Amino acid sequence: MNDKSKEPGKLSGADRAAIFLMSLGEDEAAEILRHLGPKEVHKIGTAMTTLQNVTREQVNTVVQEFVSTVSEQTSLGVGNTEYIRKVLIKALGEDRANSIIDRIVMGGTNRGLEQLKWLDGKTIAEMIRLEHPQIIAIVLSYLDADQAAQVLNELPERVRHDIIMRIATLEGVQPAALQELDEIMERQFSGKQRLKSSSLGGPQAAASILNFLDSSVETSIMEQIAEVDSDLSQKIQDLMFVFDDLKEVDDRGIQLLLREISTDMLVVALKGADDQLRQKVFKNLSKRAAEMLADDLQAKGPVRLSEVEAAQKEILNIAKRLADDGQLALGSGGEAYI
Image (cartoon, rainbow, N blue to C red; front, side, top):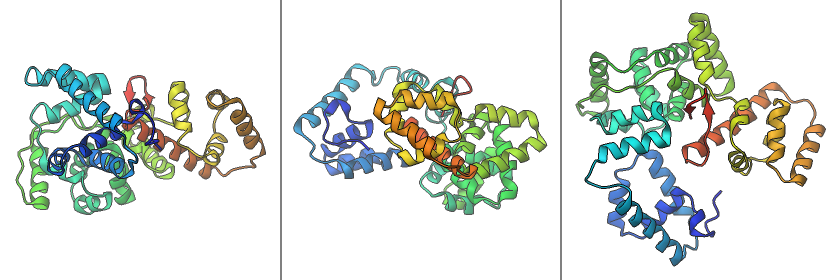
């Protein structure tokens, strides 16, 4: 958790955004929030409700940072498209940025699909469960990976592997498929939308969704995919971020992650880790904390594999949340980021 009383320079991005909005009038803040997505609204809203003892220095610093950024970096009105492109590629990498660029720079409005992002997984699953698997795959490709995983979890088990395979082999969205998707959105939201081609799907999209599923569900889907297409299964597997990949996270990232997880959870997770990863963890703890953790690991009796996998999955979910907040870089498959 962020300490809301610390100095301005150590506030998170969500904290700074919350302070900035709270320094505006209600109408102005509401107008800004109206243009944000559901995740951004949730993060900033949570920060606004938990901020305490905001000092005048913090407000002044945040406002000055905003003015400086707008006046010196964005070049508003001059080459905005190129600016957005460069920022997204620099922040996310070219592969991941391309899909977003398609949507916000190349005219992909997709307002019907955007409305889905405000719904819970169960509601979306109910809306699309009777549609053709290819249509479901396109919808899930458009959603963020964690939300898509929630939807997939609500769909019948017998269709999950088929949908993941379709996502992994999706190479853009053709006009006919988009028209069909347009009709779905028209029925569900009573608003005909003009949809344009976008680079959705691919093995990385499938891997990202699988990363957010429980280990048992993930394993079942991968086994079924392997029976149908072993090459595709391997390609997806290579792109998935697994617990062992935490060895590739830098020391600062590991230290940040360790502050977010309990000792009990860490002990259980490390029961299934190799010595290299354990040493990585010990290295990023104080000497006393490392000694205590080593003692706890030694004293811990046998642990069921399902418990180890559950603890590792929970830690990975925390790591992904930190990565989504821009605080942690998770490398997978060389250049991919989650």
